[in-house]
Image (cartoon, rainbow, N blue to C red):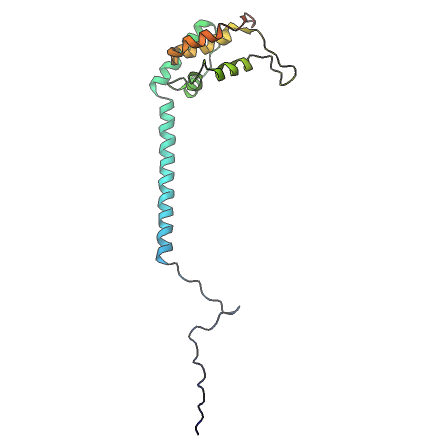
Length: 171
């Protein structure tokens, strides 16, 4: 009778990981490397687009047409006896070529409600009440509409004719 003796297990080429012998990190697979490259390319494109957008936006806001309209508006303000900003660029940046927010919906219900809300004594709650405003306050917005969006001037004038105005601001 012959007995079979089992052979001892062969020595492993990679010993099991221990605290003193941790497994080395596996190198990144080519797929992970290609994704990382795509992320860097996408980020670079986004940065370039942001820079181009900022430059184009700034140029569009300060073009010749906007400056000409701002000069025309300051002349009309001076002729009406209204104060004019010291720097014409503030008008150019605010109103651009199309009148900005002033020309969006000057005579609609929300615009009228906002105007009526602003024409108050300045209290915040219980003491708030409408006041009789100076004609020149409404004249300024009318001049902006006249220069930037003349087609919206007539509806605006129809709305403000219903407001009670007087010469309340001393010069």
